[in-house]
Image 1 (cartoon, one colour):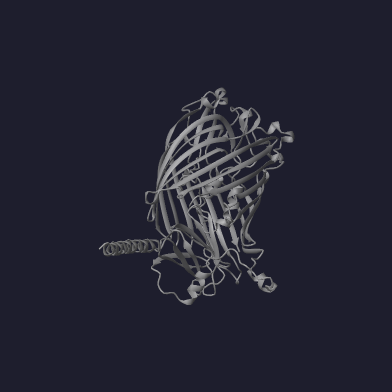
Image 2 (cartoon, one colour):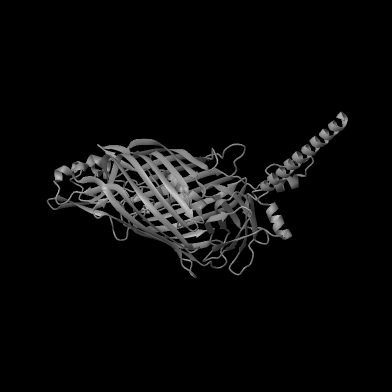
Length: 617
């Protein structure tokens, strides 16, 4: 009996083992099924002209939501392109081709298991991009070959045999220069401030060039030379930006920006305009020279955490020498559907590198042509200089900022708060400047106003905003906040006391409301950016560049226009008329009555009207 019982026990054990193995196999099958769910998406598209003819050789660039380069490809003979294996997220696409206006589209959502399909129509007057989504189905052989050549899945390294023909080897090597395009612009108008995001010249010529070196190295170069009709030679500046497209084995290399500028020159006409001209030999103002070197780096230490950081070194020479080192950093924590938390820190100059890599770019008007506008924007951002007791000083701002952003469909909500400590703060003044301490006045030889050093101060503020993308042709936004600023003394101020800023400026919090509109006029293709920022009357609010949200809060009524012109005689490239109208209503001109018939104005943003002609090829 024992042998029979043992056999039954063995059979029971065998059956139990079979059941357990079956359960393990079935659970493993379930896991395999779960892992087979799609976790990436594809970005497909076709580029055609206004008549529907496919365009071969168009350059298509993809950037992530942090404005970081992801990949680039060229359209095939059917005008098709594809980016496969993209992680679900928001992306930006930029398309350019000679003889057509560049096209761009932000906040393109890539969904897992779906194809994001772009229909891109290029034109000489009005280019646009339409986005749709579809479930992947059986593809034609043409689309399969496009996907196989997608830069997201293209192999990086290839093993070539020793006897590989030299002619074939040259085909797989990238060209020395590719995706090259340039811009030439002539502009003129009223001069502005040398650090108010414009070049501040009455008549100037600027150029920009962008090219890809050996397929992975992006080089952008820009320059400007201008003439100021009243004060003589005004501006000569050069900028170069280098970045590398691939990450290699480690983190992506830093983006490096080098800027050099010379502003102003010797001129006998300055004697009656410069408040401190008497201190300069011959009554003329020497050139102001500046140089800066910036390094911008990104890292993703853990999932859903994006870190941007870098350093800017600046030096300025104007009879004397001054320099500063400005570190900056920004961290973004992606909470998924709950939104994002952003924190930023900077110490020294304005964090221009963080502003340049915001989404969308702060310029807005140059969206779709960022690789040409980036170096030009760097040229317009010059050190914030002033005098203190006759010594050249650079304003230093230690800024802490935190913000929250949530994107719901085509609507974006954001709120930001900041606290900053300013050393060698400045206010712009014009009029009868005799009562002010000449040792604290700075005249740059180009601006219609002077800069008065008001010493050190602390301030804080917040800004809440909502941005609504109506369609591909229109976007509107509104914001409200309270920012620290100054109020000019009421009534008459003793002229002798104006040498002390505390005698006529009092710190307080002030309201600010802003409305922004970005639109493209149908049929004619005119691109318009309208902005109006309202502030408390008699308030002077130093500008704060928010780096944790995209809303532009600039006091005054501002309009930027770009009107594309049709091509003539088959000339490659395209022409644009540009207009930049700043502070048209002269908001923020705060009068200060010094008594004895003396009056001066404190000005945050001087009114300026500029126009130009831009040729891109």
